[in-house]
Length: 297
Figure (spheres, rainbow, N blue to C red):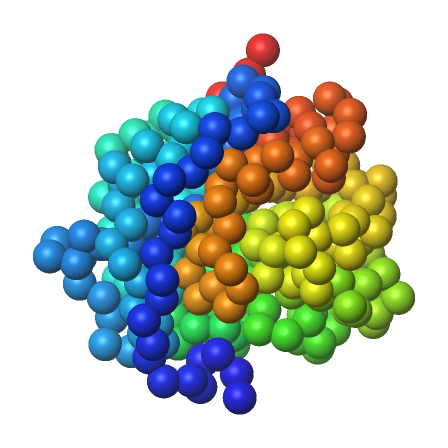
């Protein structure tokens, strides 16, 4: 049974006591994958949602990033809010210089709505086969056509890695940039020899594919530091260091493994990206290029 077919269930909140990481993030670091949820009194959850998170607000996010040393963030609209992007837009409005967003929208919205979202910091739209109440891959081509001239990219959130193989030809045909969320859901057990990983590497050759390294703790069969993920990370980083993105996935919704501490996740950065040049690309320069942040000297 897929996640979208499961009944609505409550999600545990994040570790509310993130530790200060040992690794010092470079100036201009962007956390490319966070969500904000609620507060429900102001931003109710969608009746069609497949999970119910705790309130994890903009203020909570600010406190987290102050502890971690993160300067910028991309707020990916959370599935619990369905296609009502109000909670995410409200967060973007609070700090437009430091934040960008990824919307969850159906195709066919009025042009004025898209332009308003763009003005407020949205830079992409996400389709998911994981959660209900949003937009699935059937919207891919239309959303690409409707948002490409705004410079938006497509974000694909896979329930199973085989779905990447199934959608490969369509991704090659659309003209937008696209991001494969969470390493396209390829598990450590599947690894570099899997059909899905071969597909990912072919898609990197399109020059429009970006790979987001976030939530990999969910894909590993090993405890922290999840070394079974390292061969895939190393292969992607070696092939296209200019197309990798890093994110915490805070507040870790639908987490089927022990809840990570976000300070521990930051301390994986030098394991994933051993040299300062790659660290700066993944954390600073690549997000600036894709999401339209000012460059950092």
